[in-house]
Image (cartoon, rainbow, N blue to C red; front, top):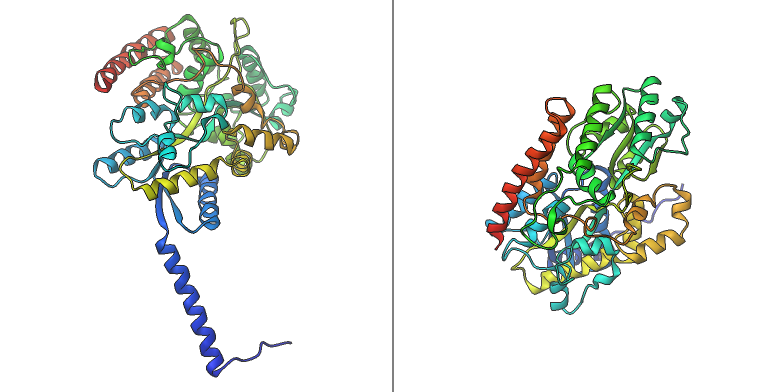
Amino acid sequence: MRTLPRIAGPAAALLFALAGSQAAAAQAAAEAATQIQFWHSMEGALGERVNELAAEFNKRQSSYRVVPVYKGNYGESMNAGIAAFRAGNAPDILQVFEVGTATMMYAKGAIKPVQQMSEEVGDPIDPSIFIGAVAGYYSSPEGKLVSMPFNSSTPVFYYNKDAFKQAGLDPEKPPKTWEEVAEAGRKLRQAGLECGYTTGWPSWVQLETFSAWHNVPYATRANGFEGLDARLAINSELHVRHLSTLAELAKEGVFTYGGRGDEPNGLFVSGRCGMFTGSSGSRANFLKNAKFEFGISTLPYYGDVQGAPQNTIIGGASLWVFADKSPEVYKGVTQFFKFLASPEIAAKWHQQTGYVPVTKAAYEATRKSGYYEQNPGTDVAVQQLDVETTAQSRGIRLGYLPQIREIEEAEMERIFSGKVQAKAGLENVVNRGNELLERFEKSAR
């Protein structure tokens, strides 16, 4: 066996001195770098990806060091960020879910608009590089980016191919309409599954996106994009019909209400439910944890509704920058955002997570690589968004939307459990939700 030569005396002392000086230099460089605090809500496989992004950015340059910190779910991190701002110790970057957009936009003096920030430091971020539906959601009425698109998702339809085969259903022909979902759900139940269909994020999927997908208003004033005096419009005949349908399927045992947010994901990934509607961004965790083959398809729609399907709306979150930071911090944040938007990084993030590619170049790079052909269904989210939007389908920009969702989901729980009829439940949502919108309008003016 070969042994390394022994180094002793002056030579050893020199080597130790060199090693010590290199370590000291590295430590000094790390301390000299401007630190950028990044609070986020990504956990599990997604949290790992965020840490990798920060590490890669830090490795590529030495002037700035992004420090990612998990601060709980979207609601928790948003509340933590607002509380920190009021206490005078806000992070530099805060990840905020899409329903917090209006609240953040009208938080007077708290936010540094992203495009303004980048232009002031002489390194402009061009909004035209982003997919239109994404940029439009996070832009001011003047078309200026107010926050940085990051983990944009949209609801998609997941289904268990193994369970489909077991039930005698074609695993390559997922249901396209709600009538077909009901029929497939009955067959899955007959084949022994605990439930046929469940949904994540009930308000986002079954009310907000449902409205856009069917090209009907969720709220007046172009869903809030045209003014603070917008009011809810989800007590229409179509909305009542849809929640009544789900309530009937729940009574029949075909639809199972699994809770709020991502809580129902476990019903699908465990194999207990054969069909699921939820975030395209759930794909990463499904790939990691599902013990069966699953497919991804477009959202169901009612075939007799004129104009359906239209397009889905984005979910996920964007990155907001707090006001009153130093010019050096803003330079570093701008560089980090441009790193995230680079074709290589944005495409990789999209492919690893299932979130949509937020830039046109990332989508093209992914398409040209053959990724979509090798991973069927991964382009569904993009296809659902890559449509010219209407006043009803651009998105939703309402104040107190997180609180409105709480009202909606509490009422949906009553509807699905048979405690109240869909029409009465939705009327209650509209009345209570409009009270919040009136309050927000007064506070924002």
